[in-house]
Image 1 (tube, helix red, strand yellow):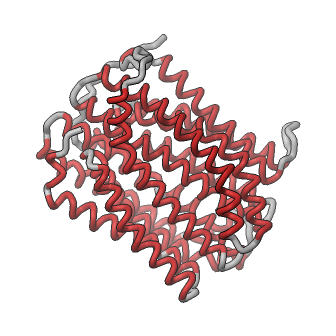
Image 2 (tube, helix red, strand yellow):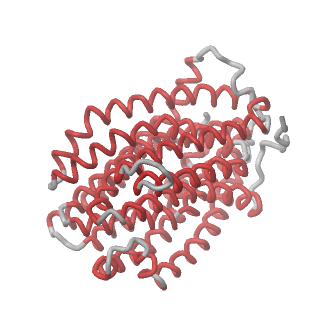
Image 3 (cartoon, one colour):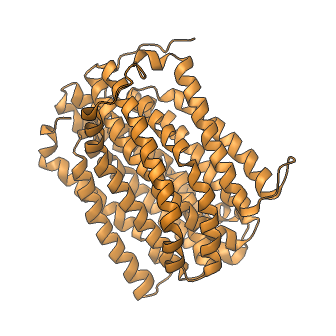
Length: 451
């Protein structure tokens, strides 16, 4: 068994350290986004209706997926703080308890889906055929949640301890399995049964399980489990559980509120017709795929801010955030140019015809601007997470979602404007996030928080 090199757990704040942490995270985020895009490209071959349904089911599953991300980010901040304090044994205790919390929440998500998904979707969607197909898909897809939650717990460990280079193996395995089984199960190739739309659900579950298995092997092969004593403590510690839940619960609620509002947005989009819903589903993929660097720098901001505070270097926090913002903004500017130069090329990948492309181009341009705005807004928001003030995160998200929800209702339902104006809600969302997060750091109240 190969032992992981025991580099210092205490991070520096230069550009090299920022890029060294962010780039592997970006690659790890890229692969699931490629999975989403691959799913939708294959499903688009079944028809526009299937592509539209994929938008509803995708956002529904993301509601539960981001709950796992909330737990992940809270645990990541705690692990990074202990890394800054150079307490490797405490990192293992945090991880062990985080795993059991994640399993409990995932099982609750499965139960809620079987109980509530039919009620919510049949009551809110106008077309019952779309609702029925979405429900049957989700009954399968939701069983991937335990694999996904355990997978993100390992991400919290690797990012929080600056082991991001090991993230790539699990995500690469997940991508290869997903592409192979998507093509095989949706269309019945490679001797596999032809399952159509539901084939994407089975493929995604198998891919998540494979990614989890590979990253588990990597952690053991590199000796990371020994360095941090991951499984030395088998007795539950209520104090540790409480600490993780106190830090993560506001983030879980924050992300859940955010994604529920996005599901609300997609329900309003569905009222504009099947094509509008199909276009919006492709936009979710474009936004997710080309926004990967923003999410990577956001995760880097969370970890590095918490680590530096753990070292007691409070005066270096704001310069660190500004460095991360500069790099994130620079990369997103290239994305903005790319999207505005070639919007038709991106939309043509989904093979839905010239009318689909023509209607989608203005939305792509709005998404391009939202990626730029989000590239620095999300860094500031995740820096708040790194300070340990997760209740402030929840407050910022709640205020922003109220503004966002009012906007989308007025524009899409009351005024019945086009989906281009509906997608401008992303600009509203990220602007409010930035103003509130930046204002919190300007207040100076963040520096007194202890976790």
